Length: 439
Image (cartoon, rainbow, N blue to C red):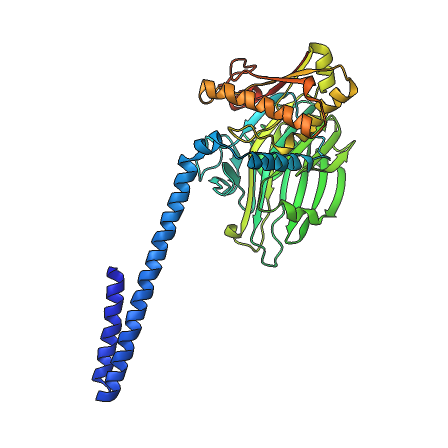
């Protein structure tokens, strides 16, 4: 109100000045007009401030209801909302119906940036630009924002082996202005005699062998290409392909998955298999590094948003059927859930289909589905969450794959049966698993 009074006084002062420089009759007319205008402006100012205050109060009230009323809503869920939610989740999972990716059995490396400082390069990583960890409030979690003209290497030091998988999430958010945005590369290196985090690899992403996928975004789609090398010689090349589906990847997280079995290389993005190359990578050497690279462009850094997150590398690719024959059960870290929730993510489709195929091949086969968590959080909450996740997996197998209910039972063990140390990120990821036990 103080600002409103000051502004009104200024207008009146202007009117008085006008009166002093004009004739009496005309001066009275000006003064009256200025006074009316000042009164209207003051009224509008008060209304605007009131509207802001009301809006702020509504937002606060909505936030209060969301924060304080969550448990009450959960206690009395609307059956229709539950049915709609279940149907939506089923549709999301079915949208990955061509996704046959199954992750490695043993988690080797995990980095989700949750413990990294915002504004810094992730702990242990190496880079040659200004790529830093940021919060994406609209999406949630922490992400590595790539800077233009930069390369980053993970903190991993171990070899991946001959059979392994690599996964990460990607967000592309570009303010397209008609110019060509920078291309983005991700790939793997077998560093040979060099350390996997050596500075030399920032200058040239080559080693005993290597490969990269290059994405070139455009406002209406984009191009992608694949190339691999043995030492410094090209080993495999797939020229750029134009694909308007790329525009569906923008401004939301998409899941990137790679599976390497000796020479065979398969790559999926957002549930679609982009490559299946039987001799896509050289035999020599063992991969031990994942890299990300963003080129330069006429755009400013503020206009280019390339973010990566939730990096996971796992080795060993023993088929579920073989595990089942050997031990009477099999375990997977490939059924993914929203953090702290029991909602099955669509990226779990490949593993779920493998389970459903086993059940379809043998009508006498029955499973107990057992959920496990890491040791983060309340012990009782982890038990409950593990039970809910096992039940969610059962529901997907019934509703999406047509498995009859009598062939599946569920249980939850929380963090009571770890298979790895909970002192490392990789160990925690290994303990967050779903187990299928033959009955």
